[in-house]
Image (cartoon, rainbow, N blue to C red; front, side, top):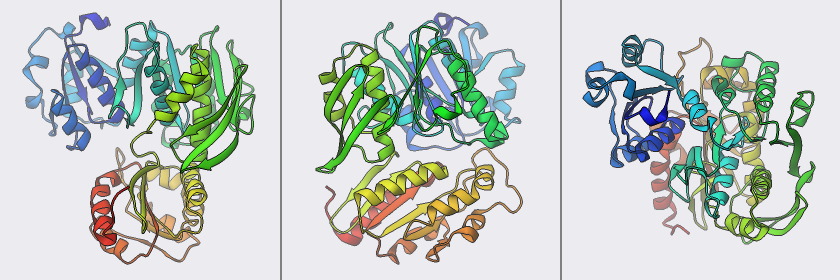
Length: 466
């Protein structure tokens, strides 16, 4: 496939965060871009406002004529693995002989002839890739970036730079997608068991990450979080492996403190010391993510002062410890955490930033298989909240599994102040709480409840958003 020959692009599952970045990239190149998704969301609505054509019913008759009515050699069809196997549009396009590729395959084509920085990890890859992209974008070097979240600075999941600028790619382990990439710099933020519906067990997850770093260019570098290096130590690679972390690793962030609501730390690595780096993004894990981003930026030849200044202007990613409301009475935070390790990091940071405050966590489990596989971990971490509200499981691409419900988690939670609540009753339940910190947590559609929760809390406290 030659990208230069593509005039029209059709995306089956266009509303996914990774798919929408590709849609924007092709639209920026002047292609006609259209797609299908199951439901209309704020993201798909924004894509439509940008000029993309989207419909929400699985019907071949709704595929635009600019896709079906032109030479197939000028059309590229991209699909997400989350699309069910009986999807009518997908099967029609395959049967008619269109060029049909997975999202990961298209990313592989885009990056195959360009200098690429791949950021992988079961947790932390979105934030880390977005910080790297932000630092490079603020510099003369620039970048092209495909990020798995909406960057607050740009209100997009895509950054388009010069043709020869580095490509920053969030390397997704789901469906082994990241094995399509051949990065010059590979970052690994974490290697924890996840997506066991795909991998089967932890050993297969580690094996796949090992295969990913083996694909790093021999003259490149591999940057691995010190907490994950034991899982990759035995993997033989031509590129050099280097560790990083907070107070650990060959490259370190240290002397962490909070000043005026921001994390401040010192960086030491790549023969460089940078004092008093200020990060306006909560979370210990995000300090580690920033250490990785600084390292990549130094490898790319940026000066310490410009890196430090760029970090000072970084505003984060939507739904990654995102402050929705801050008043004297209550703080409302929305977060994408959907794995026990991510919930652990979230609550640890909340306790650090709001010591002594009463915390209400509203959690929507994501996937039946993930709930089944990590039920004990979810229960252990969620028990650390003062109050816990569980929503029913968000199924995404999965069919129900008998006996797997949010009740599985509730039965194991040690905190008696916990219950399951339906979405329509959530606001009433929040009204029964006197929590000073409210968290909405999960990777399903819980984000669609955020505006209602925020509106209620504003009215309740009659406060002014800071």
